[in-house]
Image (cartoon, rainbow, N blue to C red; front, top):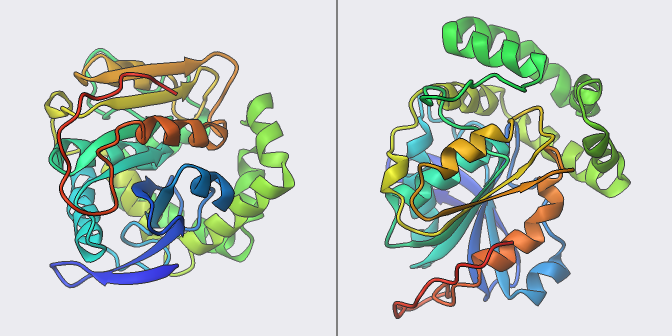
Length: 307
């Protein structure tokens, strides 16, 4: 089910709900580039878990208005606006890749509403002390993030024509990445069903403009705007050890600084394996019975099991 909501500052956000629309709500925050129609568990998986999955186009992607100069922390007000429009008091949140830091922002800024949060194949903040941020990262990502950090205008000028080409032929992005994919990632994105979902996702992400992608990258390179140590809800950090797009050391760094975090690193997995991990992550997110579609929740002891 597709919906549009208007934020307090007048922007429009396009969202999509899937699964059991009367079920327990979970926000799914898409990757970079990405959109509300990105890969997700099948409807049957969601129904079996009694899950209402809510995804939306971050500003500048798909059908959502741009929010120039947005920071990672700004996601919290958009998620809260959507939750208010849907009359959802409490909910869980999960983000993958570029969406993962945004999930952590929701956990930090909405402690009375977010019950649990999961960050899959996340990056750490660019200013992460003690972390060699680029170590183990593929050369294309090193080049792009270096440019975005040092010269945002040049980065945008480079990404605009590239986005236009990918919008015309979304398979172009997967072809660009092919030489850098690990064997595990290559196997996953070669699956006909997953490939179809990814191409649909990229096409919709860039349908309106390249600025969702541009603003995402710039936000990830700047200070995120919140304190990781302030997160008080249970957090699951999931990573593939072989990831070359956001190296696993980033999740390890995050896990050492988020008080109630559990870090799971899968030795043989890489970046796109997060798509396959999502059903088990949903099970962990909803292990807290206080996630309900509506009404007040009674405080409960949080389940410490992990996916």
